[in-house]
Length: 564
Image 1 (cartoon, rainbow, N blue to C red):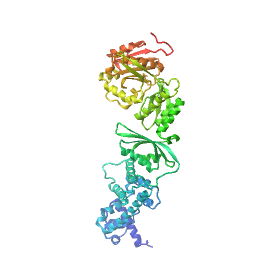
Image 2: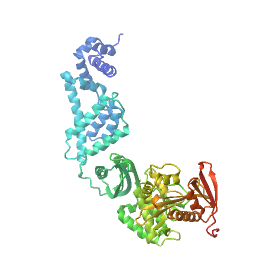
Image 3: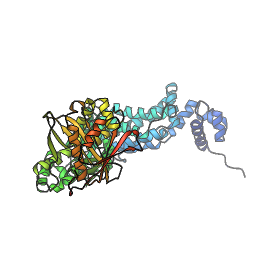
Image 4: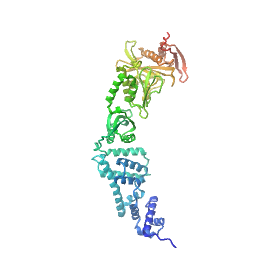
């Protein structure tokens, strides 16, 4: 008994299947009808009977193709069986970059390329592209129905753009000179979709339950960048409660805001949407008080702190959206950095604020410091938190004020260093100082363990600086003291007054010993140190070599009178 010969319909299916496999693996140009017959296990005349030439065979194969999975997702979305249209388009764009064949089958691409030269093939290609076009246009219409497309946007133009991007990615796959990062591509796509949105989308008014969010975005320092951030929030049905921007040295701006968003909106949804308008996105849950505007919150906090000044550190943390706060002895804890804000609250204690992943900027340091000054000025502060400074008259009768440094003094400290000669700076730092980076300024302007004093003239210029800080990391017994006075103020006794107060601070902070590192050639500084009410010993510093003199002195506790 012999096997049954395949029917005509079965032969056709085997031919189309074999042709599809060969067209995909070899390409149409390298596949003959004889190759197809051999692969299908049929006579060549059967292939000739089905199709007059390869283009006709390609037309038959193409018309039988199902849509690739990503294209099918758009078809389903158009039919109302998908998810939110904006999300569908973002997902399709992501898949199109990572797997272009999921949008346009390689056989279909060959058909599109050959269609202009074969009428039968052209008919098939036009029919398939019409289905894609209708689906893309339907998804755009869904976006428009939700108020997500501006009235000036043409649906046909938007549909053409969607089709062209997918086809272009598939056609160029493997031939571009460089690959594109998937995150960057998704961000660009989201940005393009956002640009379609109506300026004032209808039907987006939200009247359900809301919750506050604290948001930080770094964006270009342009008005349009700020507008994009606000527009994204508007499209999400969110209201901005407070907002401030701060231009940074690198040409970017920090946008810090509190928004009231629909309760159903998740943190990741907010972060992803805002990533279309900026970078370094920080989104954290707000608190009930965030529903008030910033000025109201500050005034309420001030009223509370008049009665409860001990709550100042928490209020400072709340003002700058810090993750945590501590009150630490002036000689302990971490120095200021991009993630740490260290504020001199009293001579003995610092307020230390921390925030991961979102560096503090100068304006935030100034605000927190201003809050501490407000408490000092209007609150019945607990013992030890009052003012700490001196009015001094120098040898020529000039008056200066010496006080604890504040974060907002950093720029004035840098300007004072710029006015000082290279020789003066070298005597203080033992190396050439040409670039006052932000982290360095934080330290010399008070953002370190210990304390910093500034001397201010009648115009408000900082003309001298004094530091007392642990000699070694973690050292609580030995402190180093150092001063710098700009050239035009030298020789008037200012350096000596700063040194006297630094010794007083070192005693107050509980240090047993003070050291001063001085260039061996700087005899003037050594004379100033020798005039202080302490007994000095001199030695060389093993780390710095013989050109540096290490002067050390024991300190008597505050409860005991200083030796004469």
